[in-house]
Each structure stands twice: as structure tokens, then as C-alpha cells.
Image (cartoon, rainbow, N blue to C red; front, top):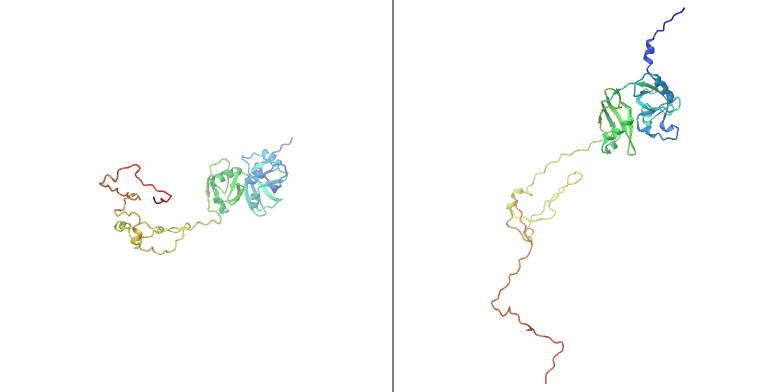
Length: 310
């Protein structure tokens, strides 16, 4: 009777819960089928073959399923989630922005490994174009777009679609690790200045002191001034300083005394004067006969000339 003993090699324990394989990757536009899968381009998840699901179900892996993608030819890597298992065997489909980060061409080889990532607490993004500032609420737009992502990797340039326009953002920083999971997390989001953005120059505004020609406003009560049209100073809308204008000509008495002047004017007091002429006074005569009415007392006129009477 023979007996034998099986030794558990330490190297076998390290690979029993790990998924690692190579696929030829293609963009989502190459996916055959009647259904439009343009939604894959709006997120950070890939499509894998059914054999991957069968192999993952045999392993004691943690959920959600997160993977590390590596291009060994360029030594570039990123992280992603999985959307469906409907690809052809030996093929996986990636978003176009993810293939750009990995420097992969159509049909290139990519290494796919299952990983466990820490939950994100903080992330910082840098828009790659100043056009991102045209969005009214960029944090709300980014939060809505990140619902299609499973994880973030520091250094990646992700693409989000908003209002039929694609905006690219570089992941500048993630905490607590360089690669984090953003599924069901409370993450603080911050933005860096967009690439190519220049802050507008601010010019100090110096308050101009009144000149001797303008005089002190407190001395207006001592002089008799009237209304003068278009004597104020103007400002430009573009912020540039206006040119030096000639000082106004001195007032003449004919300019001051127009209409009905108020010679009792005092600073801080408003007086409304009606612009109406005084009514002429009626002359009362002592002779009552002039004011007496007499009927049919007028003289008549004839169109025919009166002839001489014989």
C-alpha cells in the first residue's frame, strides 16, 4: 500500500485569486453588432469576452471587478472596470481615450490583470482646454460623467462628453493612492487652471483729485452757476484711460441767467419753480357806462354803395 503527500507550494497560493491574461484590443467602433455602443466611449469601462467571466467566477475575487491594463511595449498602464462580457474570444474593446493613454493601436496586445483598489477621497483635475470654463457648473458636469467610470489613475487624460462636445481632463492627483476606486465613494473634487489659460490683467484704479479749475464742491454756494450740457467726464468700457480733454470755457453771464433763475439757491436744497408767465392784472375803471351792456347798439355795414338822395 502506497501513500503520498501533496505539498502546497507558496507560489501557487499567490496566483489562485488572480486573473491575468492578454487580449488584442480594439476601439468600440470596431465592435460588431446592431446595437450602438457609443456609451462605452463616455466612460472608463471595457468589454471583455465570455471566457473571462467564466474564469473570474471560478476565482475568489472581490467586487466590484477592477482591472489593471498594461502595454508592455510602451510601459504604460491604467485602470478600468468591466461593462459587459460580449466580446469575441481573445479580444477586448476599450474607449478611444484609454487606448491613447496606453499608446495602443488597433489590434495591439494589452495585459489585463485583476486588482483591488482603495476607495477615493480626493481627486484633482486639469482641463486641457480653456473651453471647459464655458460650462456653468463644471463640478456637477464632472460628477455626472464620472458615474460611467469605475476608477481613476494619476496621469491619465480622461474624456467626458457634455452638450455634444468632448472635454479632456488630466488626472493630476488622487488620494489615498495613485490609483483609486470611485464606485460608491464620497470624493472631494478640485480643479487646476486649464492648460493655456491666462488670467486677465488687473489695472489699479487711481482716484483723481479735483483740479483747481474744477474747484471744491463746498464752494458752489458762493458762486452763481447754471446748467451746462455735456460738461461731465466719461469712462471707457474697455478700461483704458481716456485722453486729456481741454478744460471747459469759463461761464458767461448770458449762460447762467437763463429761464427763471433761482437767486436764493442753497446747496442741499431743492426748489421747484413753475415755468409760467404771470397773468396781466385787470384794469378796473371808474366809469360804469363802459362796462354796461347795450343790446343792438352796433353799427351795420352794406356791400352796396349808397347813392345820393334827390
